Image 1 (cartoon, rainbow, N blue to C red):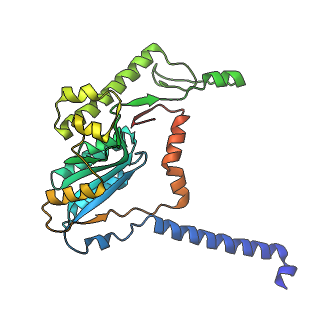
Image 2: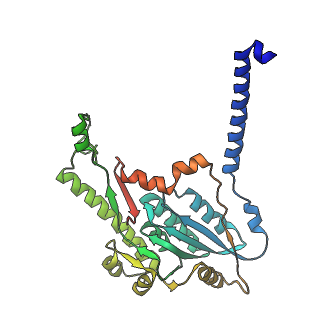
Image 3: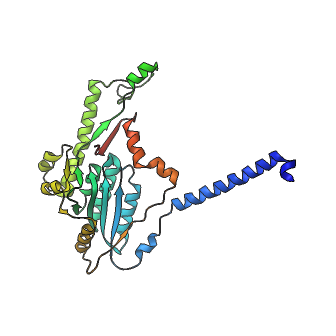
Length: 299
């Protein structure tokens, strides 16, 4: 037999075949994972309310912005509900989604529906909508900015590692994890944090049409229940997702029974999902050597 006469060649051929099949399989899964799940099906039927889910730590805005734009341009979608179940996340992504929401409210009604948690960056996004519905026990608020990094200076000293840094200007390595922070650097970062916090407060004042002084009085990082948030003017109504859909549909002028559709989610390959999961994001941040600034509620 061929396998006995040429064992090495047989092994190479078998290995090559398995490798080729694996490459084809992975490529096929990747193609499936990057395609949307039947968005054309959403265009069947009459007037509807579109639902976009914002779940977990907000690390990327691309898909949410994409879905907002789709629903905004789809004539069959008369109103949009943002279902938010998030403790917040990166400053940039939160602000990008907020901006897209503000573009959309000028054309269609947008309502935010808060799940278990809609805090910090999650609330930032909700503040840009036409109205906010929360459960009585929803955890929301946490209006503030958190910055930080992990300092390994003592650990390096104990194991005998000596970091060497060459820089062209004084503050190029501000927030370095291998040395202590100077008083001047702390002031710089505090000013940065204060500026980003101010942007948060201004966004709430604009979106909620609240007096700046009122927002400032409660923008100290504390969290609120949905019920408390309603009493403070941060939330409009108490209710669940169905209540939010009903409200959005009536605001848009839909008569009779209100139908709703979810924005299609991109099916993400398993490996990519694991690499980009919210759990990993939180774990990375807990020992991150890089300086970060977040609109994120950290219990």
